[in-house]
Image (tube, rainbow, N blue to C red; front, side, top):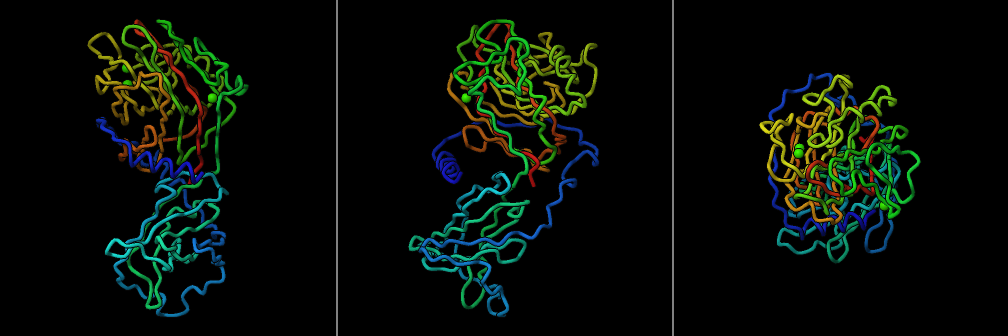
Length: 404
Ligand SMILES: [Ca+2]
Ligand SMILES: [Ca+2]
Ligand SMILES: [Ca+2]
């Protein structure tokens, strides 16, 4: 897990990314639809853990006398710089996972602050203590539970008192974790239309053929409502006439999962990427309003003037978040001009209470306020081709849900 974070950080530091992002003006959802207030942070007392300083000495944080001395609670200016390096701020981690909170203390002059006492504070309470090593680095090791690292910080403690310099960080912990690598023909997923499972260990929504529409849906593994982080790998290209149309992951709050087949039958191909059946895409065959969040990878510019039911927000290839199975309802989007390269690309969307955060190939490319209504539900992948075509390959799904 930690190695993954370090890789992510290294990638973030080395990658250059120039994408355009945008949002369409939105009518705010009614307040009772927001889920921010519906997910209280549990008041569970965090389980005290053992911290492991890098000088090898193990300190039981539970034995530390937390501030009976007035001097230790005094806040003073020390001039240090404190930073948490991993996990990345805003990370999502399954409940009960052991993590290492790794960071660095520097003196104001930019030198490492060695042999310095640091404390992990949660809600103002001391949850661990460690010493920095010769390079100024510290490690706290603990198990995440019930969102207890949602509002944490690391501070420096000196004999004269607690330093005012601190590093805040936020880690979400999740009760639900869904993983699927498609390495075996998946039994919890049902094929629809042109989609196929490839023995290579992935799904393809369309093949390279023109005029296709395909999907795989999962009506067994429920994704819970609330904060969530959705990740998957895509690969597209090798198509005709410049490549199109794109593919999508949708999580739909279908009251009756038996409706999946009628939804997918009615969903628009082409511009609708095999998922669009709401709003401008509603049909007499499926006129039920459903709540849904879709992550779409769109490789064809549609314009309403050309007889289509919507205009894409950009002429470039784009990754977008849409809602309520309406491909015209782009909550957020960013451009990815070169995505039809038949290379693996990792897409991650974090659904937070008040904002959306999208990462592409481990780099955050978009973070913006959004009043989301994520009710959870069942998921499906879909894709389509038209006059232009592409392969639309999906792999390695990871969804952390029911997060706090
Ligand atoms: Ca695979
Ligand atoms: Ca399009
Ligand atoms: Ca689009």
